[in-house]
Amino acid sequence: MSFRGVRLKRDDEKSQRIQTNKISRRFTPRNDRIRLFTRSSKFSTLKFVIFLYSRKRNHLIKLLDTIIEKGVIFLLVFTPLAFGTVQAWSIAVMEITAFSIFFLYLFKKVLQTGSSQLRYSGDNDNPSRRHSGESRNPDFFINSSLRIPTILFISLVVFILFQMLPLPPAVLQAISPAALATYRDFGNYPPGTYHAVSLNPYATRQALILFLSYAAVFFVVISHYRTKAQVKSLVKTILYMGVFLVIFAIVQKLTWNGYIYWIYPIDEALKSEFSIWAPFINRNHFAGYMEMAIPLGMGLLIYYAPSLKTLTGAPLPTRIAHFWARDKHVPATLLLLLVLIMTAALFMTFSRGGIMGFIVSAIFFTWITRKRRSLRIKTGMLAFLASMIFVAVIFAAWDRLEQRFADLDRGHVGRLNVFQDSLGIVKDYPAVGTGLGTFENAYMRYKTTEPKLLFDHAHNDYLELLTDTGIIGVLVASAMALFFFLSIFRRWLTKHSMFGKCLGAGGLSSCLAIAAHSFMDFNLHIPANALLFTVTAAITYAAVFNISGGKIFTHKDVGSCPPLEGVQGEVREEQISNPHISGAATEAGNCPPLEGAQGEVRAEV
Image 1: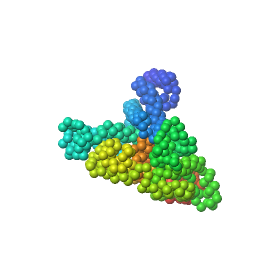
Image 2 (image 1 turned 30 degrees about the vertical axis):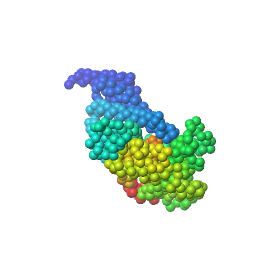
Image 3 (image 1 turned 120 degrees about the vertical axis):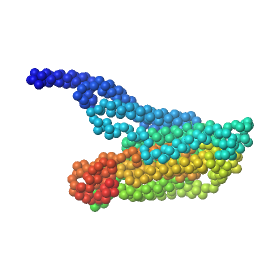
Image 4 (image 1 turned 120 degrees about the horizontal axis):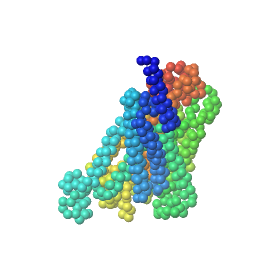
């Protein structure tokens, strides 16, 4: 090529670069936008269109994220304040909000999926990124740990739909002869009329919609909440809401005028002379809310609680001074205060089931935290404080508590009589039950005591599930819960993130508390408590599965390799927080042994 040809080619390239830079400066003042246009050798109009479309899409996705998170917080605040969400209007508000955030989340994931496809289509010059699967939103699909529970959940929903399906008399006679006899005895139906297994299909449909609203919130939480900040926001909302309910309950008790919120009248027979009940009216349901919130606070408390073993080998006064100087001391003190307030309020309800559920969860929390060495060093101090608080509360209200537990066989409603009468329903409807949400309709034929009272629940969630769905429904629901919580517990045993370990222990203890209380009450049929249980189970899963850990500390972060004094406790908590990052164990192991910390590093790797 001649010299003139080379010069002309250089001039063309120079003019093309100048033109491209003008367009870039005009439309893309930021560096990240400039890289979008200069990624290939030629300016592409398609890339510019994709950029403008993606910009609007990203703003919409951020807006949807905010709406979803605010919607979940709204549910946690609204449901307990609306008398536990037991009235039709409040249930409708909860269901509309739950399904709205669910569909908004699905819409957001569709937008993200489309954005990823557009981004890949423009990355033709980077095939490794295009084929690596990066940013393909794996959380949109069901995690492998949830496959069996999801299959069982779908099976349970299909079974409930089957309960509402009109069946020929011959089929109904084969699967539920008692239901067919009930229709013939209490209804004027012509021969050959199709009937459903459910004695009240409308009530079953309403109960199914309510159940699906819980499932919608559960799906959103386990899929959307994937960072520490997101999970902390939910836990703190629950704790602050719990303390607010306590303060409201005390003020309401001191200024009681016969009205909830001082404007809404209730029957004086429903209130207790000594206990507090907040907007729930029923003290047992208020206790159920408290017993779920307290273990979450305990889990977050041990996450923030400093350890006295941070200066191994140092004099005790030095270790105590270092303990009080820690940055986590202020949030730990605040959390301790919140837990104390809610614990005292739980005992002030004098709910036998709530107190027993709390004791069971406290024992389980102590046991499960002792299984992990990194938690064991923190729980000793907390166990001492908890025992002192427990003794103080017991002695302060011992006379009233003793009276409450002495009256196990007496009270306004004889639970044992309700249990015995409910067994008659199980005997007549053993396989498929009477239909979800139909206990009130079925129990009227079997009631032997308190003829003037209307029982809408069995005061035992498990027994009511058996009467409503039969053996088939109980087996499916039990298997679903068992597989779900076992998967969380197994993952928790190998969890490396301190945050996941602490919140996992607190969340499992919280779920166990309400599970124990459900043997003596119907908290899971109170929408506010059922929603709190749903969110608690979901954030427990998110803390254990979705959050891999925080910052990975290396030798440059913590100092030189010789034994470190005063920092190894911090390294122990977060040093190897993500097991999937290769080289983390090598970074922790190449250093000479750290005094007081090397055992924990080995355990957490």
